[in-house]
Amino acid sequence: MNIIWYKNDLRINDHQPLCESLSRGETVGLYCFDPRQLRDTEYGFKKMDSLRAAFLIDSVQNLKENLNGNLIIKIGQPETVIPEVAKNIGAKAVYCSAETTSDEIEVESSLRKNLVDIPVYSFHTHTMYHPEDVPFDLQDIPDVFTQFRKQAEIRSSVRDPLPAPDSLRGPYPNIKYGSIPTVNDLGLEEQSVDERSVLSFKGGEIEAWKRLDHYFFESDELRNYKFTRNGLLGKNYSSKFSPWLAHGCISARSIHQKVETYERTVHKNVSTYWMKFELIWRDYFRFSAMKHGNSIFHLGGIQGKDLQKDTDSAVFKKWAEGKTGIPFVDANMRELSSTGYMSNRGRQNVASFLAQNLNFDWRWGAAWFESKLIDYDVCSNWGNWAYNATVGHDPRNRYFNIVGQARKYDKKGEYVRHWLPELKDLPSEFVHEPYKMTVDQQKLYGVKIGVDYPEPMIDLEKSYEDIKQRD
Image (cartoon, rainbow, N blue to C red):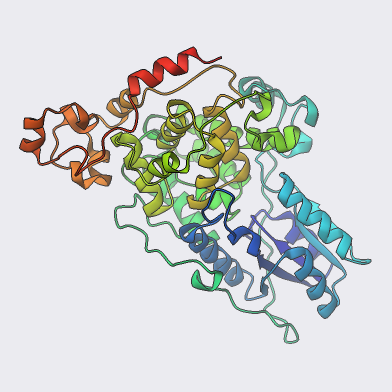
């Protein structure tokens, strides 16, 4: 009997550990809900909040169904739970997906020590390009994305995804499988997703493939991806594959293969290339994390900058709760808390605002995203935050002009009004800068700044001048 230790790879398609294990004998799946993922962070909020946990539970439930019920469910630390299960069922080996960052690597290392005479076999399943196929040694991965991308596109190829097993047996009668916990069972308060969400996200491999089929073939939106991906409202402005990718409900290789199918059978254009381009970015953050290790979590990032940043919890709370007085920031932050999701355009702006305009410790924001995002992926999340904090892969002192971005991507203010109903009656002239209204205009439109909607917590224009003065 072999054990498949499932982590962020909750699928049966394109799953090498599953295929390898089945080729060597009887197999049972196992998933551990690790209490360490549910603890309070050093910043005072949950490491994983309820909406993210709900998506995870959906995904595990669907995995169990796809395995015909042959999935053991446990709540506990894997390095303790798995040896106990292995002893009880007489397991001969453990198969799993390889992880990249320190916490996950440490768990696997501890498991190997605790398993006596039982080998652990791990496989790379998370990237589009297999690590063996990229044209660089790990320590030579370029620190500039464009250099990596160009060489990968020329010299690497994407392996074909592995098919799902032809048949999977049902539960073994002598194994205690356990039950899947609810959000409340995990010590979290269940939260309903706001009906204003751009999409009704539900975890699981079946839902992942439904979303892909809809976006690529039913709605034929892939042909427009490059031109609509910065949209803020609507389910089809971008692919929104990220929650399922983050949980491994679908693999990057499977998406790549379907893009190429679309190119052959429907249409090939700059948008189909751009979908592959974004998957390369995702790979790049993971390979970079392999190279740089824990420095991706440091305040100075992979550049090792010596920085002094604000850590006032009252300042952070205004940002996290969407009460900064800057509508574009607040709308995005309220969407995140209400739905567990936010557009890529929104993420870049709120990250820039916290790290640059507020000159705040960006790691608080990265941890907040880890707690709230249903598509949290350790490498992409921390890599993108470091990038926007100018301690990652872009050494320039870059920042976003928040109001300029709002006027470009939310021209009529529809997104802001969608998430900030207190501003719903404001004309486009003031919807992104309500603090510029006179007292009479505030009376006219029924919004009193400082009462109905917050005063801006900073002077944006002054903050831009401060940013320019930094090294």
